[in-house]
Amino acid sequence: MHEEEKKKESKTATAISIAGRIAGMGLAVAAAVLMSTASQCTVYTAYGARPRTVTYSSFPPFVYLVGAAAIAAFLEAIAIFLCVWKKGGDKKAKILMPLLAAAVPALLFSAAGAGFAAANDMSYCSAYGQRVSICAGSAAGGSSNFCSQVHIAVYLALAAAVVVSVAEVVRALGGSGSGDGGGCDSDSSSSSEGGCDHGCHHKH
Image 1 (tube, rainbow, N blue to C red):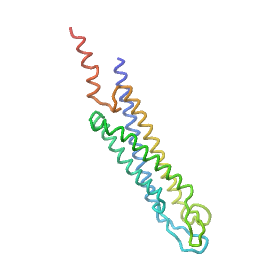
Image 2 (image 1 turned 180 degrees about the vertical axis):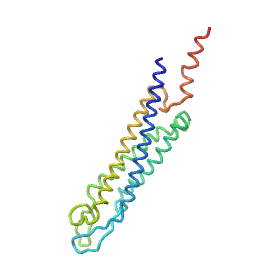
Image 3 (image 1 turned 90 degrees about the vertical axis):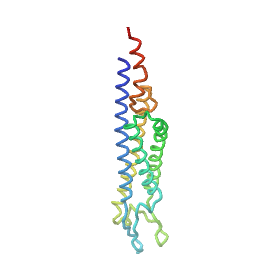
Image 4 (image 1 turned 180 degrees about the horizontal axis):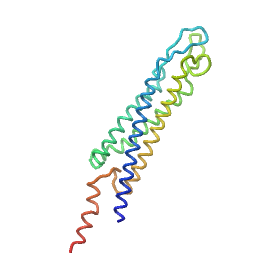
């Protein structure tokens, strides 16, 4: 009875973990897409200089966020595949799952951190040597949409990092409770541990 409760808890933890992984992957994709479309924003300076088009690619941290979020989403898709279809019991899955569990949050948290640092001071140097803020004052022009898009993308990357981290914690707790190191619902491991031996001891 106690073993059945452990199995049930493990399956619940696995289901929650997979749902969290899917949500995290979706948020990472949304962050990458939203940031990559934050472009074609014309900023007008107050000094008579020519209009300047500002895109996400004008800021290296935003370019990193797009790349890191896209890679994290791809790696998370691999983790979901290993957990759902391979049940975490495959040798490659047991090796890859801990690596993916460390790599995905690291990419997303670093991308969010870089994005926040750059989003707090989005400016450029005008032809007259003056620092022009993109999001504030008369220089904003049509850039309000650009700025809001950038900030939302950064928050989405942070949300993806948090969701993926929580999913990994749930996976680890479910795995430790069931005795399965992979944290995914492995049929082969559960059947070999206690199931056959328990039946044999009750033969008459």
